[in-house]
Amino acid sequence: AQKITQTQPGMFVQEKEAVTLDCTYDTSDPSYGLFWYKQPSSGEMIFLIYQGSYDQQNATEGRYSLNFQKARKSANLVISASQLGDSAMYFCAMSVTGNQFYFGTGTSLTVIP
Amino acid sequence: DSGVTQTPKHLITATGQRVTLRCSPRSGDLSVYWYQQSLDQGLQFLIQYYNGEERAKGNILERFSAQQFPDLHSELNLSSLELGDSALYFCASSANPGQGFYNEQFFGPGTRLTVL
Image (cartoon, rainbow over all chains, first blue to last red; front, side):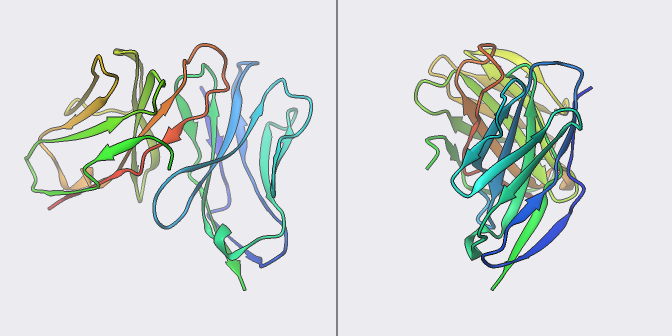
């Protein structure tokens, strides 16, 4: 069975600091993709970053990077230089077949001025 | 703007009623996914269609059904509505599944359903 776990219901970070949002996953399939989405208070789901299970390097997209530790089955999201606009819910997700996606319960991030 | 459209944006109805939520995927995307997001259940995958055919099924109740039409738009039908069905319903689309697991989903703005 596939499962995504986000153990931090809420996180706080000072503006301009870096923050790490945790995500662990469980799958027996050797091929999978890991995704992070952001959901601001307005409700839309915004794709942030992707990591493939065979990718050798950690994915980066601007201020977002994914700390992929395959042996530990973790895919933590690192946001550098936090901005007030980063305050939102963040969801980790996994796709094994390219069809069904499995989402974690989310982490609420609050950036403090 | 993700390119995925959902209508209506808000829907208020009574228990026992039936509603239809509509989704138009991004141009060229063949796959449509439906999700339910409620406060206590998080984001739950309901069902996926690919080019008109059901591809994957998640935690979708028997009172709910969906279909994807030849023009690739999709509808989610919710019947015999209960208070607990109040939630934000998302539609997402992606390019061809099965070509690999990198299959970024683009989400629509959601339909907020309130059952009174």
